[in-house]
Image (tube, rainbow, N blue to C red; front, side):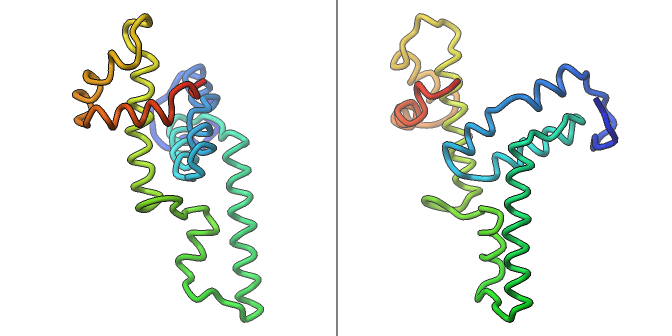
Length: 159
């Protein structure tokens, strides 16, 4: 599977590299939050194991390139943004859609996803979500209400 793009010396089995490339968890998270850090995370995972980069990440990169080209063309036409850093961040979709930044949003979302996954994949499939709230809150060091909010927001949507 290593086509020269692998970034470390570890030889990953082809089946594992393919599994990583084919997983769409990050795409699902991106579609849910519109936060491109999920795409960058998947890109890094693929590069680290020598897996092919999924088409949906390449499409995001293509859009970023188009957005940067527009900024560049505007600069050549003497139409420069007032705040170039913000314009570049916007070109990459790195704009916050809530409190904090794309980085703090991702951190919060990762916690929610982890909680959600734990709820979905609980040891006993017969358990109901409300029976797991306290245990999961303890594991992640959060309040029960945080787990309940995560379940309310993410529950039932995981594929």
